[in-house]
Length: 161
Image (cartoon, rainbow, N blue to C red):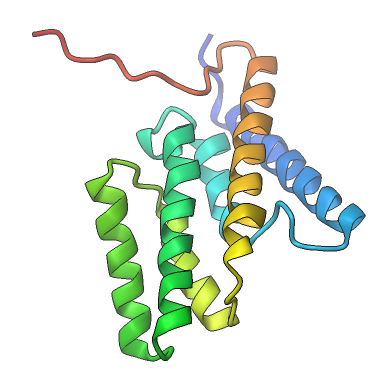
């Protein structure tokens, strides 16, 4: 049965709200940034709103965020933050995501977040980036399994030769 636009919007919004709420509640309980960072808000649009998209799949979410956060940390720890280095960092993050076939648009903001926010600690890759992106994928997987007809992660069919 095809979902109406209204039903799809409600299902997507509830999933995104529950996911962010859960991540934020964990952070609040442990008094720190363990699972949540701003770019995950945009990740919600993909994994709940267009969960069939290749850009929303778990490997893209996790590795896209990890790669671009590592780029941001590399830049902020080695170069002055300037308009030029901000641009190069975002471009380099995109280059690596495309090269490794894990593009995830919300991850493009990670170098900006890290560089403009003055984050220098490499532990940021563990938490919130890795722990948060993995938790997000797990929560999205569980949520979509509760919705009849939803499949996440979504496996793209390989073209037959």
